[in-house]
Structure formats: C-alpha cells, structure tokens
Amino acid sequence: MAAALGDPTTVRIDPVTLAALRDTGWYSVNLSRAQSLVWGDGEGANFGSLSTCKDNSSTFFCSGSGVGCHFLHLHKGKCQTDPYLEGCRVYKPLENGSECWRKENTRWSPAENWSGEMFGFDSRCFFSSLSRQVGDVWTSSSAEGRCYRHRCSGPNRYQIQVSGSEWVDCPAGGAVQVKGYGGEVFCPDRRLCLYSDVSPPLDRNSSSGFPTCGPDGTVISPQDVTRSPLRSAVQAVSLWFGAVCVSVTLLVSYWKCRTCMFRSSSVAPEDHL
Image (cartoon, rainbow, N blue to C red):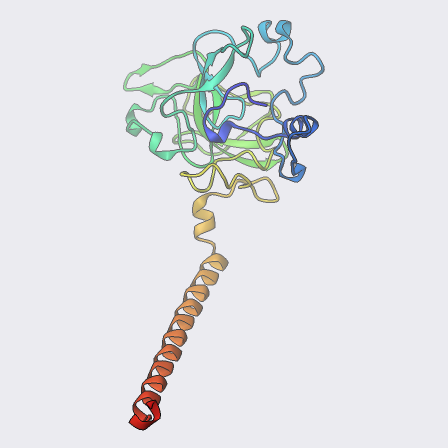
C-alpha cells in the first residue's frame, strides 16, 4: 500500500493491499483485479526495516539530494521522506515534467542534449552518467535519473537507446557504455520487462489502460494500437455498419410517417362523428 498518493501511474493496488482490505471485514474485493507487487520484490524478510532503509542496502530507498528514478522507472524522482516513512527516504516523482513517457517533456534541441535523453511512450528512467562532447568540450556528470528508450527482449532482459545511438543490450544489475558518449548507464535488475501491468496509460488523460505489453514482453505504443491494420479495418467496418443502420432507421421512420399521413387524409369527416 502506498504511503502517500501521487501520480496515478505510480499507485499500485496489489494483492497484499486487497487482502488487507478484505480482512478488515468492511470491504468486498475482487482479487483478480490486483496489480503486480513491485515494491520490495526480491528484497527479503528485512525489507522496510529502519536499518535496511538507512544503510543503502536496498535500491528501493535512497539518500542524498540528487535526481533519481521512482522505483517503477516511469518517472524521474527526488529523494524525499514524509511522516509515514519514519525517516526513510524514497524517490518521489518530480512536481513538473518527471514522466519519461511524455514526449512533450523534451525541452532542448539535439545540440543541447549532451546526456542523450529521449522522452516517449517507451522511455524509462535510468541512473546514468552519460555525457558527450559539446563543441570542443567534453561534459561530465555524476550518475542521476535520466530518460532513455527501452525495449524488452525477454523477462528481465532489455535494450536501451539514447539520442543518436543504436539499440544496445543493458544487462540487468550491470552497466553499459554507449558509443559516442562518456560515462555509463546503470541497468536496474528486476524492475523492467517483468511486469506487464507497469506501463504508461494508453490514454494520457486517464490512469487506466495499464496492460500495454505484448505477450513477448515488448511494449505496445499508442501508435502501434492506432495503426494496426486489423484495428483500422474493424473501425472502418463499424463506421460503415453504423451509417447503414442510421440510414435504415431514418428510412423506416420516413415511410411510417407517410403511412400515418395517408391514413389520416383518407378518413371521411363523418368517421370522426
């Protein structure tokens, strides 16, 4: 259960939350609607203890003040605490422009994009120290949360793409260097390409529509859905059938109306007496 609500795409209704609500006796729940429990996955029985959250032994917690990644990797985040966390700190989404999956969050021209960030539906947050030459100067930076494209090649296996690069394998739990850049990208383990219900909403004005991964783990973008030949054909047939139904309805109504008018005009005046 989330300690505090935030962006709808970060709120998870997992089996533990639903079971807890059911056990109160106040709620009836549908466990089939539960979402994957990503928080603390694989961390062991001590996860969430005060000692664990403060000794930097878990990647679900953080320290420092730099920009990082929310644990679902859909957003950049800032390391913060709140009254519910008892001093523990987690990466919470930034107030503005934290979504890696919103292409409109791009704020610079390609020449200014020295870290290689790419925003879009299939982009996710990675800790990265990538930098490239700007003019005659090589920039350098410490690792922080940055947005790059990703695509799944199997469970917990994926590739990434940064601005101007080819797709490169990103080994889960390791790091990768990218041609044309200094520094490296750190590849999160057991966070990407494992949970089909962790993805941006297809409708960016809605918090629904989360299952957006194909059966092989690849991400399905809104463009893929919209441009599907079968979907387009179904939409065309539906529109044609709808137009025919409306036309038939209007025609039937017209003839019924004419029939009523004919009958009224054919009744003799004495028939009304």
